[in-house]
Image 1: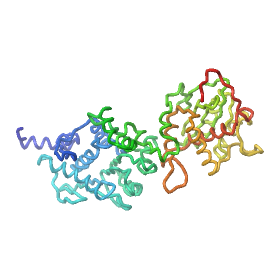
Image 2: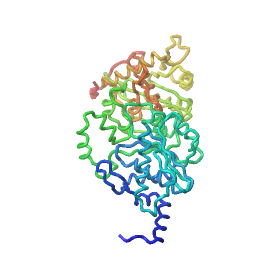
Image 3: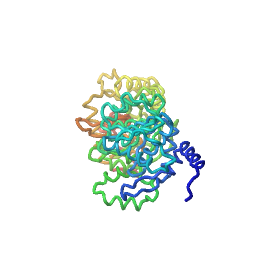
Image 4: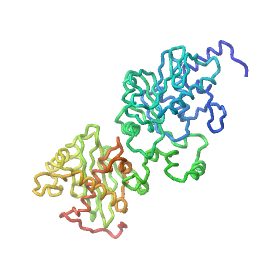
Length: 480
């Protein structure tokens, strides 16, 4: 290959400074398996990753193992430094991980053509500084890491495993608010369910924060196919070890280890999840129409309707021993009075079933709205024997009891659920370490499960028409 002239070298440097994709074409990396120096490959998902980083100030991504993300982050850190006065902060789990990420940027720089290299004025284990006043500073996740730092780009690699992820985020976020970009990526630790990383990721997925969520599954690397998947899986004695290293879907990446799940994860993943037969106004999902001979009960959990927790009306039908979700209203943007109006219409379609809602302030208000609209007061469950206060009175004891009762119902196969958000919410429930109770992962919701619990309690207590369920079903019903 002919050497470039001075003019061509200058032109090429201008191209590289202008585009990280051009720098990527010049990049060499070290194959850790073979110890060979190879060209960095711009796989399609990495091209998209680079573009997203430059076009979005806040990125959070979950990933499979060995998909090229760490080398790409090292490349991005270096490219940012072509601009004068840039300060790149890299936060890693520990000292070793911190120096490893910086070493990758150093390796890339060392193997660039001389006319593309930045001139270093400092080159240490945790800091690399350049003559244009830019630098890359890498820090292990200690309690005070990031305090007082200014930054142009913040990278948090394998953030799920940072001991002080929450504190570091709080320390460095003001620098990001001032105009920096932040990239948080990680594989998922299946032994933990309430990490700061998961909370941010769930918030991004649910639109509750400004992060752009990404996910790189195990098949994004060219050459990986089902044959590769099955061959690789053979070398893992424990299934969860393989599926969490090489998840095919985000749900699989976030799924808990079965041994810590409150609900049987394998059973839940076998549910016949499907689209509803009809969706009204984007929030009412119908799976089965009202049918004579079916007993119905609705469980309700009410929120303020201001974009936080969700309001849920969960309506099940029962024939014989078998129950199935028939309809659900699920939204966090509907005020209790409007939610009551929508619920009233749906409940009338199912012949005014018993409604079991909370006796708390929001639940009681919702139930009063139903009564005011003409819903039979006798079809609303009251813990209060005098019937002066509408609703089911919940305590810590009843919630734990009802959760375990729902777990038993699901484990025995009596209840079928087709609504995917409900399955994901059930999967988030875990027995937490150092706690003597079960609860959803931090950042996850429990509104659907709360409504399910009330509905399940009603069926177990035989609360139905005339306060007793009458079992009458067609010859075509094949329930258990």
